[in-house]
Length: 170
Ligand code: ADP
Image (cartoon, rainbow, N blue to C red; front, top):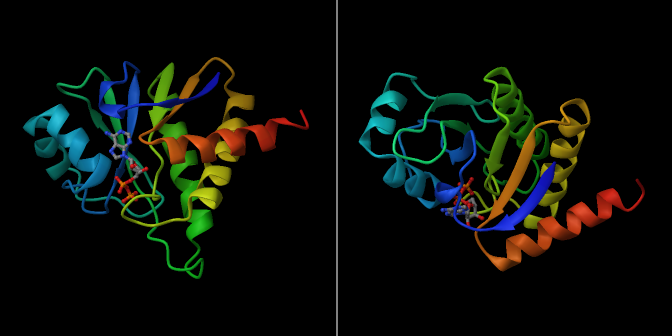
């Protein structure tokens, strides 16, 4: 099942939430800062043992004080006009997070809009890539629930449109 909702990802009661992290995995602004604040200092302590993560890859930790059991950390690409393979790297983020969630027996996983904040990936392109990649994964894993958690109405609007576009012909 796929749902697009408006909300704060740190409040989601799912097996895993995804963190739009940076490659150090040592915390940052935006959703990353919010997740670390809500999870407590134990999350940063575990992240220190991981030694970072490459753009487009994903690593899993426990959720500590969050309602979610796990946090899957993925550094999205920084938008550079589309010249640095950003679209493929963003797709890799969603694919690798979903693969890790399935490998860890997660029945439900929540995503923020990766790269469309501080990393400035255009929302229209990012939402299409995210929705397409999630729908492809769900074809192979129909029992998993994937939630796209949008923090503002503009983001919600783009993801809603992307879903409508991609399910129109089904
Ligand atoms: P990036 O560096 O990957 O662009 P950001 O954290 O700056 O990551 O932004 C990614 C998206 O996450 C943006 O749409 C931002 O509004 C959103 N966001 C920020 N805080 C939260 C939150 N608590 N829950 C869900 N989404 C959030």
